[in-house]
Length: 320
Image (tube, rainbow, N blue to C red):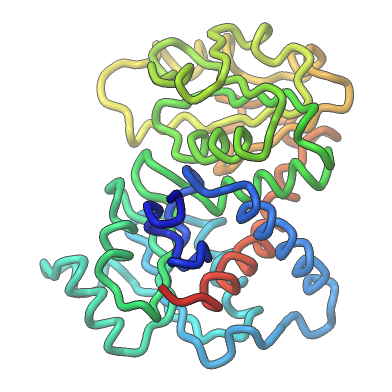
């Protein structure tokens, strides 16, 4: 019944779109991570290409600014030998008032096979997925506050790479959880993959009220929240999504919730520190931590290429 209800899966339970990690079964998440593991070696080759998407057209539609996600999707598609087209949104017909679905129809008429979509409105990738034909696939590169599934997957890949088994892990997600689509994707993935304990840590104004319903423990004190953790995932303060005075100042925020080497000592000695980027040094995390031995932030970026290769290769091989 789950497969029939989930718009990301076809009648055979195969992934045809990646819109959210919520509701995806563990075997699909594991299949993506295992496939990504096979692609990591491509980085080490002299010729960094495989022919899996040769002849396919991937259209990157980024209605929000992005560096890591947009670039790694571009690299991932090219390493799969796809033809890649990145729409300049500011200079496209959407700036003249063309609707999102009219833009999609026109690009589909240009033989698009995969749309990679980042949009400020939650649900935009769903709308596109419902609209396109059975041979076209949609990958959500972040929609509003809702979801960022490939970031969630690359975070899981990073954790699995360094910690192997999720079942004994305590993971803390720290910061602006309220506005973070990454936090929601990470929580869904961690609970599905069987993490022992998932915590969210942040000021009361930046932690949503539904967190306990998602099976996580809520802390409003950083020291208590990261104590004895195996993984600490720091989040950026998303000032562009805030309305009203949710925080006194960035300096006060850093004093209470900024991760410093001293505070990190409360986590386990072999704890890893992660961050989806972009990093605000001295706001949510100290430079000494970012550049320190426990940070695996640049590994996340590297693994993101393999994970996005895995996602695109898997969805392209299935039909709705």
